[in-house]
Image (cartoon, rainbow, N blue to C red; front, side, top):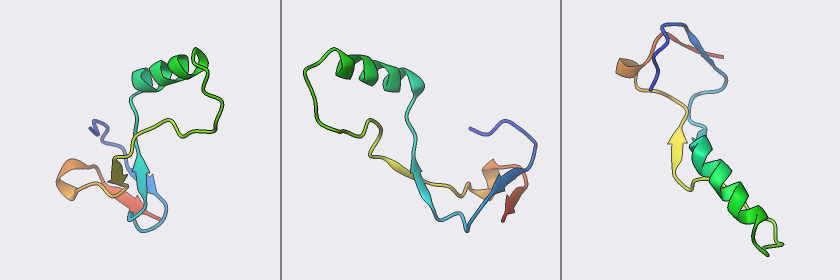
Length: 65
């Protein structure tokens, strides 16, 4: 949730996607991995993707670059 009234600078067209993970979940995952016997590379994060563009009704002035 955006609570700032400052402008948000976004590079590109806003169609890029990102995944977001709560820091508590990330730390828990790292701790579990370090205590396990797992030796392969892995991605620790969410498979839920979000577009970078925020709906106009829920954002301060958006500055696309």
